[in-house]
Image (cartoon, rainbow, N blue to C red):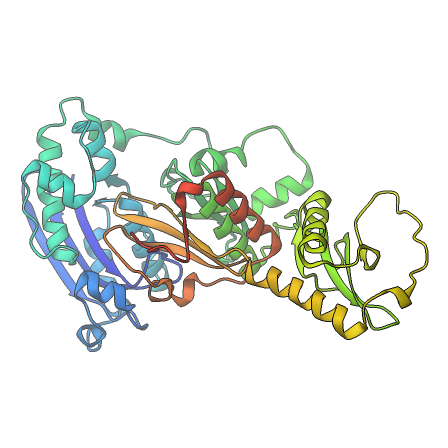
Length: 455
């Protein structure tokens, strides 16, 4: 039995939207190292500044390096029929699986995660990040955040795990099998590789096209549920028969999984995601001008043909906002309309008793300026997909602008320095509402604009 102990450096956290900048593979036979391979990789995309700062790998360093396709044959030969070992294994595995598939190699492998193994073999440690774990176990790391430096440290860590595995944790992990028989046309390894953590899963057809995207708190359990039960309807059978492979991306938190699901569905519009609810706001505060030229405010049900000043989930929230504007800015309640299930008949307005059109409209403009100046802007900082990263959600002017992951050691005061192009998104009302509700439930994870964001 041989192990391929791997570490990679990348341009970002998503395998789907990022590339590798360096790879190191060390072959181990369970007793000692038998082979090594290391290479810089040209990712064909600029390396973000914060990644350059973390790894020390610059755009100039990879300019003349081979692309992954040029080293794919060598990489596949080293990984083929060997057990894949890495610290936070799913991160490295997802990148290599994607790149090997693009290069024409149908590669699957059993995996061992030194994070999960260390939790079982060396329990009760304060941290299981590679740096802290090696520090606690007296393992030196040379060239931290470089592929070979981290891979060599992982080798020593793995040897310690082998030596101290008195309960056969590693053997048990490798013998784990699927929980039930999957349809024969679905690769069983795809299911076995699913983690029991939050994330999104992608079902692909035999042409490798994404046909369904879902989110889960427990990826393995949720995917399994698609193949259990006795529903034999044609619709369900067509759905199952269309699935040929399963991919996934971990998210760290349920909220990140929800946002990732929405973003990817909007990008791919999979054929079997027809049942996705089109979550739209229920109410809005609208402005219109009456026949006399007066600007009037109205709370009404959602109308996609009219742009609201602000959207609301509940009518009471919208009515409360309008009442506040009337009270604080002296607006005339006869020129404002609250939402009610039973509309009241209003008497005609005596315009002669009102302020001039210009004076009153200036009051309305001042009220609406207040609304615009008090829109929600914040960042949510939360746990990442492993101990060495955090997640962020950037919300500005009542709208979700970007979300993604960054290294836990990063300290950045300006969010613009952190946000990459692939992290940006076009949000909808549902995504915005998810973020606002989460911020209300967990205020301790929220950083306002005046705060130091990444800390």
